[in-house]
Structure formats: structure tokens, C-alpha cells
Amino acid sequence: MLARSGVRIFRNINNVNVNGRQCLKNNYAYQIKKTYNGGQRAYSAKVQTKTKETKLAQQLKTRISATGPMTVAEYMKEIGINPMSGYYMHRDVIGSSGVITSPEISQLYGDIIAEWCLNEWIKAGKPKPWYIVEIGPNRGALSDELLRVFSQNNDAREVVSLHLVEVSPHLSQLQELKLCGTVSVVKDVLEADDSRRHLHLHTNQDNDDLMYKHNITKHGVPVSWYRNLEDVPQGFSCIIAYELFDAFPIHRLQKTNEGWREVLIDLDDGQGEHHLRYVVSRGPTPASQFFIDADETRTSLEVSPESGVLVQEIAARIEKEGGYSLLIDYGHDGTKTDTFRAFRRHALHDPLSEPGTADLTADVDFSYLKKMVKGKAITFGPVTQQEFLTNMDIKTKFEKILATVKPELHKDLIASYDMLLGPDHMGGRFKFLGLYPLDVAEDLKRDPPAGFFKK
Image (cartoon, rainbow, N blue to C red):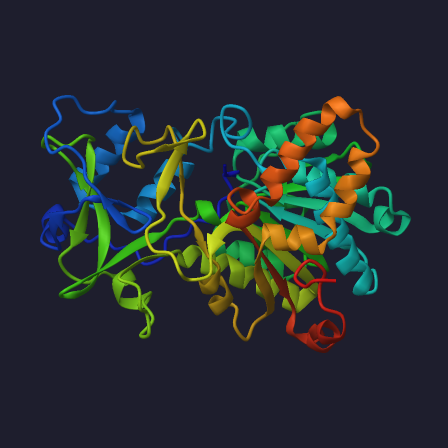
């Protein structure tokens, strides 16, 4: 399942809390049944023993008691990046005990992504320097594969550098160990206020004081770590976001007889299964007022405004400095409704059960991302992972690998291949979206990007 990172791109947007619990309490009316993929799931009305109350659950209860119900977006932020108990902050959430990623399954996957990145750089005229920027790089498996391929190209090796946007101290150590074989001392970065940070960027000073770690990879490529995309030096960039947007906070919205309302999370002091429960706001909230299109036909949906902020930031960056971006995630093109869920040890887990012990996620709405960059970037896709890899001729590459390895390895290799391409596995669930600056529109008409079209 899903890779994660503690990358800090969560911003305080449209906070729906109002002062005083009574004010918010007057804004919601009734508890709702839990929903999954559009259907209601009934639970026992009488539960004698509630699920375990984690430390984070205690913190959330204290907060809700003081300020009232929170949005699902606020809940996801706390679960993900709470400094003391956040799911991504103090543990390895990737691999055998956490989540599984395509680069972890097959080296061939990384080879193909690297080939795509390299091909687009060559088509652009091999600009230098060439920045590879990965936002939320998990354990660094994909970046490691990219650099392995780039280091075999003489032109790329001389101009490429790696820039990782990562806020989790633990994950940054795993990334450095994977990429460099060593772990350095984290630089003490002063958290400057917004005005100072923007002043620093606009005066074109060196970005060294905005990175918190630097090293040289085992492939001889310099690598630096940052807490925000805006801290990465400006220049021609290939920006990768792999299984990142599915972890972004979402607002859950539901259409009622009174109009659109927001699903909130409140205390459950009764006989409910958990210490928390879902409720529906009685009146409109900022999210239900501003995030619904007039022509929306669904009766429930999930909106991630922070995803929109980041994709606009990516678009603005490549429009100004040149480059391109590849967004890879599981999601849909504006068709799904209720996808909010949790995973623990590769199994579905109730999002309200034992907060902080499971990975919260929701399918990415790629139609929303495309809408947010309309007129600001050229987009290709989304296409399924199966389509993208097939268009990149993965079959021929895989057959060559099979021909060079021992027969006893074939079974595992074929299983990995099927996992990557199977329509019921990653091949159908994952989508690819490409972003390009507007000024290369004519070039793209003559030579469209590989992967998004059949050869």
C-alpha cells in the first residue's frame, strides 16, 4: 500500500473552528454511519468496551472538548505530523511492517521512471544545472534508482543534483542511509517567519541556510534536504511526487436536504465503539461553501485544498524556471465519493480507531489537481500505471530480464511484474499525471511526452 512522508506542506487553510464549544456544537446535529466507497457501513449501537485510547486520542479529546468538533482535514494533520505522536514522525512506516511501494517491488519500475525523466531532460536541450526534486521521498528508493541510471549518462552525471523535501527526522535518516550509506548531523535550521523567508528567496541569496542536511550519494551526486518546496534552489527541475497527495488532508462534504454540509469529528462519550465519532454540520462551513462546483453531480465528495496549493506551487516553479513534473498516486478522475480510510499492517483499519497507529489516506482526485493548474500549466493524463509502463515498453524490458536470470527466479519476478501492471493491483489503481510549462506547448504538440501515449 501507500508510501508516506512527513513532508510539511500542511497549511492552515479555512479553519472552521469558532471560539467556544457551544458555538460549534450548535453547528452540528446528528451522528452519521461510517461510509466507505459510497456505501454506509452499519456498526453495533452498543459496545461495552471501547478501543484503546492512545496518547494522541487523549490529545484530540482535549482539543475537541475545548474548541469543538474538528474537520477531517484537521484530524488527518494531527494523525500525520503531530510532533509527539504523529504516525509519520517517529517510525519507519514503509516496508514489511508499514507500506509497500512500486520502487520497493521492482528495480525495473525505477529504471522506467528514470528513463522518462532523462528523456524529457534531453528533449529540453540538456539544461544545466538539472535539479531532481522529490517531495516526500519515503525511504529514498525511487531517488536511489533515478541516480543510479543518471550516473551512467555522462552528460547527466555532470550537472544533476538531488533535492529532497522532507520534514520527518526519522525518514530523512533512512533516506540518507539509503542514498549515501552514512547519516550526517542534522543542521540546526532556524524557523524564520514568513516575511523573512520570502525576503531571502527574492534576494537570490544562497539557499544553504534553508537546507537542514547535505551529503554526497554513493553515485557521487550531491543531495540536500529541505522542509518546504519553496526552500529548494530555483532552476530547471524535474519534480517527482510519488504517493504523496493521497496523504494530504481532505474535507469530507455531504449533500443534505438543506444543502452541502461538512463531516466533522466529535467526541463519543456514549456507547460507541471508539472515543471519537463522525457528525455532520448543521450549517454551512467554509469548506462546504467554497469548495463545491456549481455543476457538481455527486452527493458526497472529498476535497483537498492543500493538494491544490502544492500543485499550483509546482506549476509556478516550472513555469518560471523551466522543467516538468510527474505526479504518481492512486486516485480517480473526479468520479469517486467516499474513499477516506486507514491502513495498518497492510490491512484496512477504522480511521477513528486508536489514532496515530494507522496510515490515513484518501484517493487523489486528479480532476481537481488539473482544475487547479488550468491556464497555469500543461497537463497530460492521468493515465493508469499499466498504461504508462506499457507505453514505456516495460514488456520488452521485462522479457530481457527474464532471459538473463536463473529459472528459479522467474516466479517471483513474474509476480512482481503482475503486481505492477495488474488492473486489479497497482496497474489499475495508480495514476500518472504530467505537468509542463505553458511555453513548451508547441514543442509538446510535435513531440508528446513518453508514457502518456502509445508508441
